[in-house]
Length: 513
Image 1 (tube, rainbow, N blue to C red):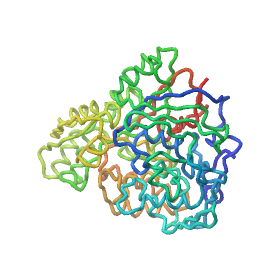
Image 2 (cartoon, rainbow, N blue to C red; image 1 turned 90 degrees about the vertical axis):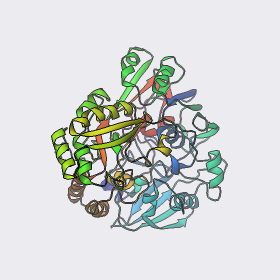
Image 3 (tube, one colour; image 1 turned 45 degrees about the vertical axis):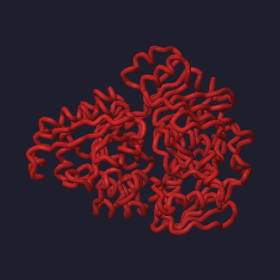
Image 4 (cartoon, rainbow, N blue to C red; image 1 turned 180 degrees about the horizontal axis):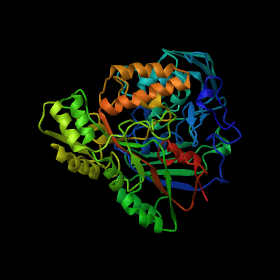
């Protein structure tokens, strides 16, 4: 079986088989060798606690590396079983029964089963948990062990996308009764066991012998991820042959990369978007007219041209992108209009506006330059933006969700509900604008349980319009995933577009020539 559509999710699941657990036909790939990648997004506070993962370095080390989830989004966007083999829903999509893979062991020898699933998911709703997956797990009212290899979930309301949610990179499976030890040492069921881990510096993993995924995935004998947050240093390491792959290439160095016969560039269009969230519970961002003034004060096309150098498209303040099923491509585009921005300032009772905007290239490559472009485009409207260049290390803990106005990015999500419930539902940990709109929340809960495709589309279209007009996140551009690899690296014919580096699964899916 190659996968399953969302419509088919309610009837059955999928046991990964003929085409490999990644769900895609693979080029001829051989086992062996060491693969080394230089990645951004590492921090000295990194750990094996999936609840804290937010950027490509730890996500790639964990998911497809040291740990597994219950399900996996394949490169073609279909859903595959990982530690789950199949699933079935009640007619109202409220009760879901998952069959678990048998014969799987953790790296410490403990057998995987239903207890591990329940205890791992409960981590995200434990008292004091700040997990971004908290709202996904909180929607489960009961987790019941039916047998050692079957778990039943009862949801507070029907959710047609529930199996997709269980592929979330935060929802790693840990050994029950040993979770503290597993987080400290990196003990999972993944293809690679931890040899060395220095937070914010590097991770080294060794291929597990006799792994349940067999010869269909995990082709390297050894893998190493090196933290290289500086973009120029990352590109130079690839050009000099020190590493085999890099994420988020510096577009200014693209001609140099393309000129090197030993380097190839991958470009994939997905849902990644670069953002400027503002805390809407904090003045002056609590005034919708201030938010609208800021929306009309940004020259989106200028950012696409100068920051992305054409590797993307203009955004419209909705996180739903071209790879989503209900992307509202016909929604009227917000245009750069300083006069209209001035009008909304006046509606807010202001002649001018003075605000700080925190930015770092840790948020996205070119974020500081983008903030400065924003500063220039907003000035004619009387909006005076003071750009504060923040340090890269600690940006996600000290700036994002803390400073009132900052730069950020999202890879996007495979389904609309997944994206909205992660970042726009009232009160969720990663609602990075603290935005709360009653009509939006009403539609969110309704669309989540709606099984009629046409009705669901109508609801998601309205939600995107509400975000455009009222939301607290400015989304000036959608950015393609652009990464570079050595000529000695072999990748599948189709590379995933829901996240960087083949959906963060390069350690699972790639090999050496």
